[in-house]
Image 1 (cartoon, rainbow, N blue to C red):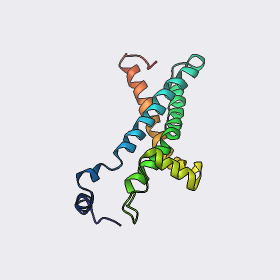
Image 2: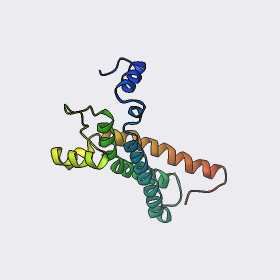
Image 3: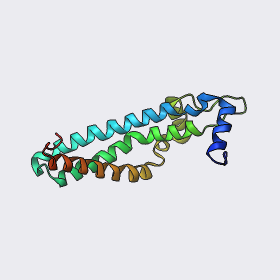
Image 4: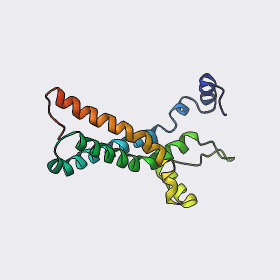
Length: 154
């Protein structure tokens, strides 16, 4: 491993890159978070509205919409996850430059060298992490709204 514990990592990063080294990869992480939220919020609302009139505003409707939400959030965020991981862990090349100059550059280089499917490496583990979170969050959220008399999310 590159580091022998947290303190060693802090020391080595600070010596090699200064304070800005602690923020390498923050933009890809922010982009990923935005894509997760874009996928989850818009899909939950769309999926729920697609079935609520036919099946009613009940727990089955909420589970269906949450599963759809988790899947689409994973589809949207996996390419950003791949770029974030590669940008955060990149090491300088022999000439001192870094392999990637940002998310778009990273995606372009991945597609050129490994093909488009490489942008979805880790999709299944990501979905297996994000899917249950969406299920628990949305079903709990809807049920708590109903229990408190606020009404369902529409």
